[in-house]
Image (cartoon, rainbow, N blue to C red):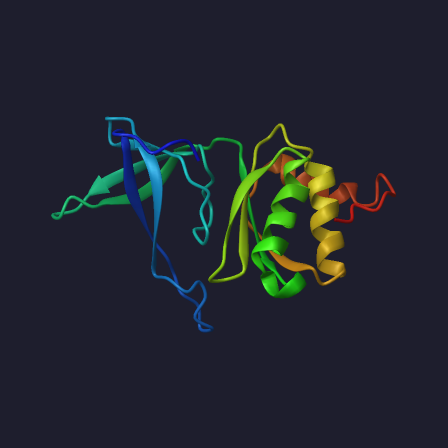
Length: 172
């Protein structure tokens, strides 16, 4: 995320909490740049919201209190949102940072959060998608983490058929 400035606003996303209580919030707030035309440019990788990624342009509507509520995505950025719950070393800060560093070498950015032992990755279309997918699957097989797709593109989905293409171990 870039530096928060005067043009940044909080955008609220309503969430559906499942029978297991996940996600642990009914509303997630993301930073965005107000484009002045009833839309915002998301400038935050979502922890829980599905179907949006950093860089997306989203329609917003203000309520009576001035809170901006997210509507439909007007233009997708082409970025993917991938989330991990880090199991290795109990999801410690060092383990989360190792995960971030491991994926960063393939072109991602992201951040970790202690409360849920999570890492949220922003995966731009220029990132090495097949290697990211292989590392995600390898780490899950090794029980380093569980992962989910928060928002994906057709290019990301196509990497599913590329499994085992390199034969290399993507270990961290």
